[in-house]
Image (cartoon, rainbow, N blue to C red; front, side, top):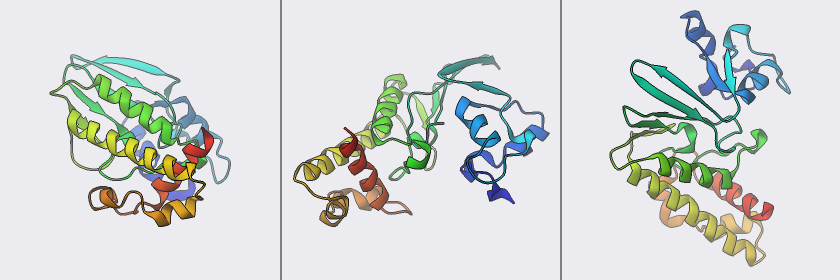
Length: 205
């Protein structure tokens, strides 16, 4: 069964198939540990385990490219890695940058404030002509990522202001502080989860 592993299915369940093609699997340290020693469920097959892992960053040199993979902080999960192809001027932002409100998985130490920090790091890497590959959605550019960051920052500011008034998370959701963004950013999962994540980040500060 594909869903027996504790990983996010769309991120790791193809690992074994790639390994069968003799692809070198590279990931953040946490990925191998989670797959090999899950808190629940069955461990991943040995073929699905990353062969090379790293904590902060690693650089590859192939096909005339210098490729930098780096981890900033926990965002979607604590396993997030961004990949920058320097010659091609392309950066893959994984689920740090998506075409809708992002999923922040608190069960894997995902962090709203980490999302903002990593988006700012991605923007620093991004020149005016860069192509940005999101976790979901169309390929974007630096201006698209700045727009996304600004929405995420503004939502945090709005939720923080309501929290300062003593509102609970349910009251903040009912106040609908992101109504003007929903048409563009709600996506298939709506906005409840992102408001909860913003509210939790305010409470943790």
